[in-house]
Image 1 (cartoon, rainbow over the protein chains, first blue to last red):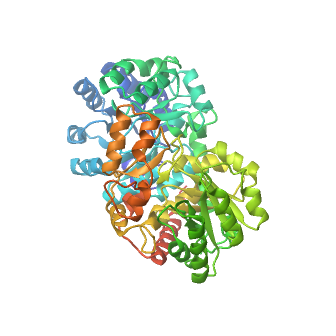
Image 2: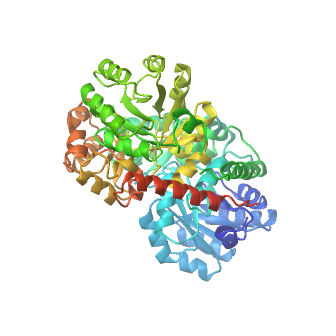
Image 3: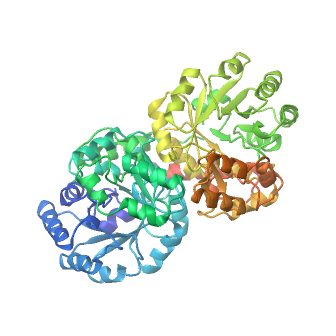
Length: 315
Length: 315
């Protein structure tokens, strides 16, 4: 398959693995790249020198293209960017910040830059900032999210109308049929998070992966909207947040309730009750923890099944 | 195009016009049926004898199949059902209530029955109740909605796995490409609301139609969640609801704030500031008030465009 996304990143299939805190270290990213997709190290949960080790281990594991995901609100962002440039990372996915700040700098050092947005206003800002590709992330996505709550089914065609950039759809993409639907809506590729979070190679705690597999359609909810909107798995911590929100808790109270280090406790250390568990709504469609190579094969097979079924002229 | 939905309803294209309070009288339903889809009279905003007049006018305007949408929580439901049976309505779409109560009765009088749900638990209950088809309505849909907030992109494949019923996707379907995506996900057809609400033949007030056309991606929000979740256009009334919800207002306070007759004031009488304006997120993709026949032609053309673009084998 050749299109704008595969050509831009030099990959076989237009499938990017979302860079997720505590889930996507070098092992996951290497497996996805090795299988013909684009693997991303999630730098948001790494100290700069930890990131450097992950990049080096990933390079030892595969010669395929890979990338790093960087939330631009990262406190030590300068140091993180220095590691990325020093290590010659070929592709950077940035999020949670202005694309103007780092795009040119990274491109001058040879990197392709994609930026993650949840609305077309920021999509247009990305185009002005000169990014190479755009990830549009719908309401159903896990983790941090936009305040407009635009779903992938609406956001992809809106972004397709608004910009001419190569477009990756994120949020609600866990099967090949969903990938096919995203491309039909105007995306050139997809970014898949939750499905890879529940893979064998994900660095998430096994208990978290099992929770994802058991999740049903009522298991996640966009939460902490006054603080910073994030889609959470419904656990005891979530219920306390929901109770606080229901009685009108302030932004400050919510921030204090969240505290620090809760994502690590939940997703990395497997503390399911009190941890912050970030996962997409598509978890309801995930039935098994599988190796990355098998997930990739299933995505491609599902895409092909949908293509064949939908190819017949109907009128 | 022949499939389970077109055969069940005896229509040309698997496109059902959502039965919407204050928007879908006989004129809209007749135009959709005449154009080869399935038009529905929205009985939720009609007294039983008003519904009878609409059915008779619709029958005078077209000999094609048509239906009536009935929210089962309608206060005078027995009288409404009597009119439906007496007038020999061939197709009934029910919602907001148990499918067990009326399905058999309607079928014994010769009607096909579809029921609208927002999750797979109720989808399975519909199957037990013997309904002929299922509408699954995602989070992005206008008007009343489910509490799980499952988006169409996830809900359609979940429902497809959960039941064997003919499946209509609703919520976020305003273009032919979105229709194509819904069928790729496992739906047999679509139910289109907002796009037809903004049609020439819709009985909505022209000012409401103009508001839909001007809507952007930040113009609607699922609201009144403690009372009964409903996707609203963001106007002055919405802002008062949002303020009350932010400070933790009770279900009772929200119900009182909503009051009675607000949907009529907004959508039918054009009182844009203080009316209740129900519309889907897909309003952001609606650019023009068009005649139904042109909307139908655009939906079919967009579907065909997507089909041709997606037909090529990619691997």
